[in-house]
Structure formats: C-alpha cells, structure tokens
Length: 321
Image 1: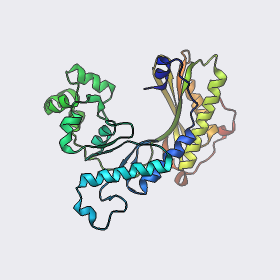
Image 2: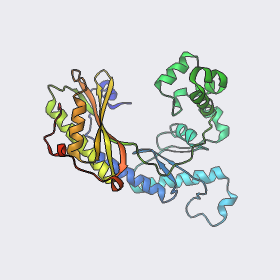
Image 3: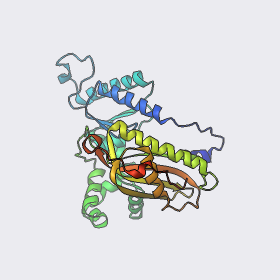
Image 4: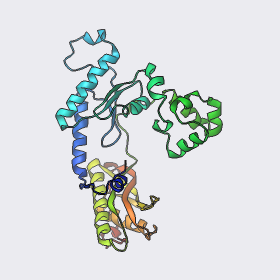
C-alpha cells in the first residue's frame, strides 16, 4: 500500500522520516550474506534479488552427499541457510521462493510473506498459481489487466486456458505469445549477474501535498537534496550521464516527466540541479505536489568518458523552487 494512502486511511499514523543511506547499508549487507552461500545473483533493487541455485549445496554438506538428496529438498535446505545468513547479518527476516525460473519465483515469493519459504514445483503451478489474479504475473500492468478483464480473463488459470491465437489477435504476436507462456509458467530468462544501469534516480513522496507557491523553500531544499543524492550515487557507482530529468506526481495522482539532454556528461550536483531546474520550467506547477524525483540517464562509465566541466556549471543555479 502506498504510504499516503495508508496515512489517509489511518489519520493518526506516525510517519517516520526516511533514511535511504541506512536502507542502502542494509541492502548491501543482505546481498553480501547471500553471496557467501550462493554467489550467482541478479540485483533487482534495494530489497530484491534473483539467485541461481544450480550446483549450490547447503553449508557443511559432506562431499558427495548432495548427489543422494532430492534436488528440491536440497534447495529447501539452501533457502533455510540463506534466511539464517540474512538474519545473522542484518537482524531482518526475508521471504524466499524456490522455483524453476524467475517468473515463477517472483510470483511464489509473494505467497507466504512475511518470513516465507515457498517451494513451487512445476506440478504446483495449476494448484497455487492458476487461481491468482492475472495481474500477479510480473509484466501484466494495470492497463493490460483491465483489457484482460474486459475480455473475461481475471485469473492466471483463465489466461492459461485461452487460445494462443486469440491472445495474439488481441495483444499482438510478441505480447500475446508471452502472455500464453507466462500463464503456463514458462520463462527462459537466465539470472544475469551484471548489467549496466540505464539510469540513476531518486524520488520522495511528501507527508502532505506541497504547493510550489506556499511551500517553495521546503520544495527547494528537497529538490537540492535529491540532485545531490543522484550525484553521489553516480560518483559512487562510477558513472556520468547526459540526460537529466524530473518527475512530479500531483495530488490527483497524475504523473508528469520532463528531461533534457546536455552536450557533456556529468555527475556534478550543481549541474544536475541547474538542468533539472530548466526541466521544471516546462512543468505546470499550479496543482499541489505529492512526489518529486530527479533522474540522470544516458549513462557512461566515468573512467571511459571523463568530464569536461561546462562554464554554465559555475553559474548561479536556476529553478522554479
């Protein structure tokens, strides 16, 4: 549930300040703990990873003993060891799903939260996955879910029973074919241990909707902090970027984005803020704002590109906040 929705439902809720540096610290700790037992992981964000358990045995397994143990039970033992390692490193619980592929693992990871351990064998798909809403498949968003419902398909099982040709007629060859495969739990994507990021961003949702006129100072401080945070992330990860953008979500939940591409890539906070401020000039600011974000894309490794500091980076910052 979105934080602001929860606050509206429970007006007496105490909203604690966020601490993203602390979140990132614990994210690194939990991923490092997993790597000690299963080093092949795909990073999917601050609190989620895919893990390839191929050939991974539980700790302290005698040499050769794993060959005589059922593979699924061995995976269960590895998952339990991973949960213990994460708890020891962070003091936190985690939910783990063991499945034949990433698509099913993603679905199964939601089935037994919190602190869950779910084994989803191929034979379990019809019983545990097909009764779920079609939108539970990662890749079926709100618009596709609404289209499916309009066509009489609400569950994954109903999607699996649909004629593949009919799905192609309504959703096109690529997405229609994928819908059929996904409903049957088919997914050939490997665990990708490393990929270059496409963009780096930070955003924040306010405890109350802010006005660009009445809350200018507060918005300006948050805007500057977001730009500085993105700059820190870029430097820490070793990237510079050419496309700088802003994201705003209004009180009515409408979201707008604007971006601008600059000639020389940068990771400097002042330059990011100046260009992001130029983007803000193209955004209507009459409505109250509930979310503000800053993004830098068009990334290149800083070591390969370097940075030619443009003159305007040293000029006064211009923005509407």
